[in-house]
Length: 350
Image 1 (cartoon, helix red, strand yellow):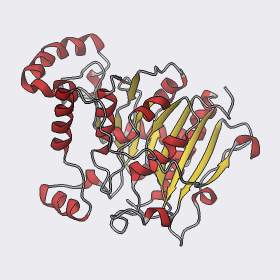
Image 2 (image 1 turned 60 degrees about the horizontal axis):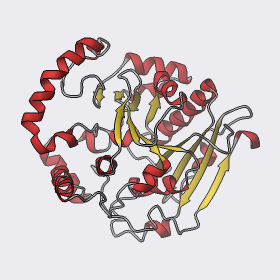
Image 3 (image 1 turned 180 degrees about the horizontal axis):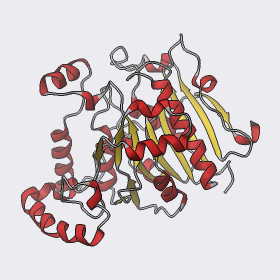
Image 4 (image 1 turned 90 degrees about the vertical axis):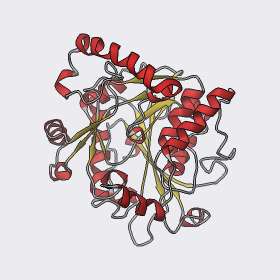
């Protein structure tokens, strides 16, 4: 597989500002991690960084982030969405970066057979990227990986191998379902490795969930927890569901809506093994730092977002009525008709 025709496109969005603390430091660690993994696995990939509404006072990301070197396997494409396009959105003052709309820009322009949407505060474990490098994904399936939160002290380490070792030794919290324990919650990590035991534990809890959840059962089996940090599916599958819903609001639960859309389209879910995880570098801003209902209310007054129960109820209504598409986005979603500035850095040109 050549660099020009990658098996996988990895899509993220960011801008050179101080969102959540050291955004640039987290993004640098993310890019270095991908350079490391693609080199280690000898796997040609493209990384699409959608630079949405870049701050005029900051240098472009391509000038401050690591670049591929001769012999590397990662091509980096920077796609710039200028301020003028951002200003078309009615919440442009309150939200400087529309995360899911930006990812759609990358999805529409991805060259890979499969597309992974993730975030720039993520480090891939060796096991996770080894799973990716097997290149055995199916077009009728979407893939999820657990997320382990880790302290931002990891950024003090310089080598990727040291960062990954630190991440494995300093987990703060695990988010996501275990493929062998889809119903049992609150199980310590060390029990995950006992597959036969966990499968036996899961059977009675599965029947309990069916009785308790009723019509919601199928939706609640989808691994929506932190799904914005790792959702992988075929490029045609992303096109089939029109990518992420492009809403003039905060991105909370829009990633869940994409999984529900894939489910409505008949796609299956596969969750990676518990150890095939990604690490999320903790930062001081964002949804998960909200501590109580009052702080959440104040946050949503400034940046309105989707209500999770509304998303669930609307999807249940669609299932009842046989509707398989949300039809939220316009045909040119992902700014498909816009000629956007793009800079490509490839190993062959390094």
